[in-house]
Length: 160
Image (cartoon, rainbow, N blue to C red; front, side, top):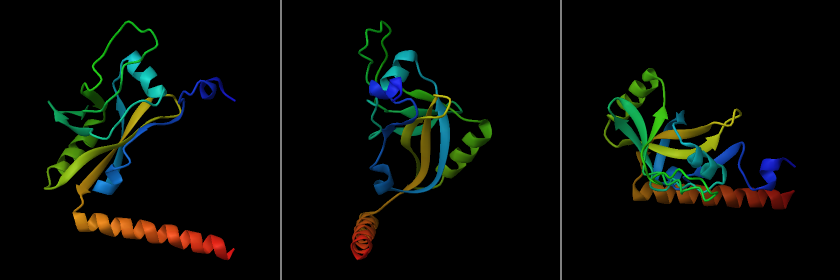
C-alpha cells in the first residue's frame, strides 16, 4: 500500500466532484484546464476537502477563472493563509479560451466545473463542462432513464 493511501491522501484521482452538475445541465463538451494554486491549497485538495457545488467558470480580462470553488484552509500548521472561495486562475491556451468564450456567448450555455483531479504528474486539473441548463421535464426524463437502466441491470443480473 502506498504511503499516500495510508494517510487518506489523494495522489492520483478525483479530489472534488460536482455530481449535481450532470443532473442540472446537459454537458455537450468537456475541457481539462490546469489551476494556479498555492501550496496549502494543494495540500487541502489532496485531503479531498474541496467542494464544487456552487462553483462556476468565467472570463475576466481575457483569462479564464474558477469562481466560488470552496477549498478549505489546510489545518496542518501552515503559516500562509488563503481565502477559501477566492477566484483561481485556470490555465488554458488562447485558442481554447476563444473557443470556450464563443460557445458561452450563445444563449443558455455555461461553463460548469465537473471535477478537480490530479493527473499522472500530480498536478491539479479542473474538468470543465460546456453545458446547457435542463428544464424540469428534462430532469424528470433523466431520472426515468436512470431508474430504467438500474432496473434493467438488476433484471439481467438476476437472469444470470
